[in-house]
Image (cartoon, rainbow, N blue to C red; front, side, top):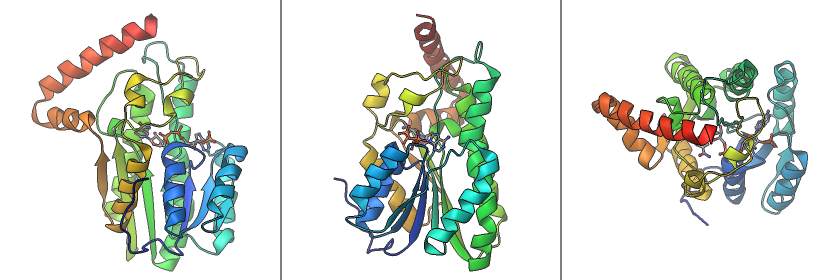
Length: 277
Ligand SMILES: NC(=O)c1ccc[n+]([C@@H]2O[C@H](COP(=O)([O-])OP(=O)(O)OC[C@H]3O[C@@H](n4cnc5c(N)ncnc54)[C@H](OP(=O)(O)O)[C@@H]3O)[C@@H](O)[C@H]2O)c1
């Protein structure tokens, strides 16, 4: 177990985690439960949420609020439901997301719609509905789990990369626009984290990829990722990277762009060959 020193920063804070049934969201829920945060956990898979809640209620209060965030017309009432649970929200964590495994050529437009809806429009819409609450209470904190793919192109992920660029763009703008006194936004840019994200990643026709990549399995352990996110919340960080090699690729793109394009294109050729194998 990866432990963090928090001085009970999260005790009795109401934290709504969207995307809590698996991966980074579930790891955050476990960590925050140990810190005695009051949790609202959201995703589509009710069984997974319920079994997580059964585990966490031994430690703290945890409410299951199932939702499919791709259904934009339902999000207003879900936000109202979330506020009814404990009367307010201190921290909102956008961790829901879907990946992609397909080259742009041949990928159906419906796949782009789905990626943008879940990875961008849903967190945007939920945030827009919650901002008046944060404004009224004069405080709040939003965590947006973006990706290193929100900072540069990556082969086989055109729609995912676009959705994460949009997500980062929206939240970075909100950071410099808002006038709420005690309000913070933390953008998280992970590289590869060992979670089941590739299993549900969309392929060219929208079918799930259903495989784990070697690189994903060797990614940063999810508990370390969750601990770093908790630390960033406490320190009210604006943007954090949780990455290994991808971090160097990012700096290479800024300092030596030609080298970045060379490496990224090579990765693209490899990905394309695997795609057509
Ligand atoms: N793992 C990585 O290497 C990595 C790297 C960079 C960024 N990220 C980002 O980290 C976030 C968490 O991903 P993860 O790695 O933890 O993957 P994960 O284990 O697949 O978790 C994704 C979560 O999103 C939820 N979700 C997906 N579609 C949803 C929908 N329509 N409505 C509600 N919830 C939905 C899933 O729950 P249900 O299926 O139950 O709905 C699940 O709880 C994502 O935004 C991802 O893009 C991950």
